[in-house]
Image (cartoon, rainbow, N blue to C red; front, side):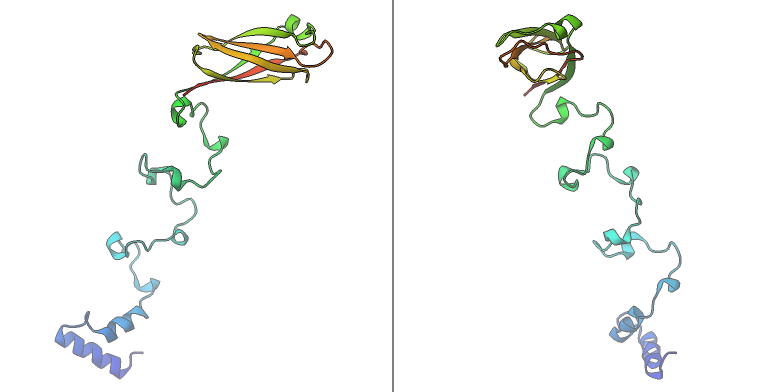
Length: 191
């Protein structure tokens, strides 16, 4: 129920044309307008003070890719470790997406059965030429010896046009074969 005093203020404000300007009425209205008093779907952007829509005001999953401006999500907008392999499409990251890398190639080289079972003498290296398309002589190479005897180590690695030459050296004091199923994982990159 509106008190006589407030009713008098409202009547006087209407007569004087100062309804909106009256501090008493603004204070009264600020405490009496609720959700039920607002017509559904009537609030517009101009009705919301800049910077006033907060995270708590947005429903979970309410903002999708259609609501984000193209090319507008920057590194500072992404939390550390927020993007993992499950968020990336297959083959979506290459050398051009990495800072200061102009080429990034992945490959695998499989030892033949005779190479895998032939023992390597002490401190002797076996040379394996691995075909990796797109490799140039000035590229850098990282290799990983997979499923090979622990005595073996990748010694000298060279990149050539279309080929990575891997020297596998026996570092133990006995003869050992690389082992069945041995492979060489290869990463070729250029800066």
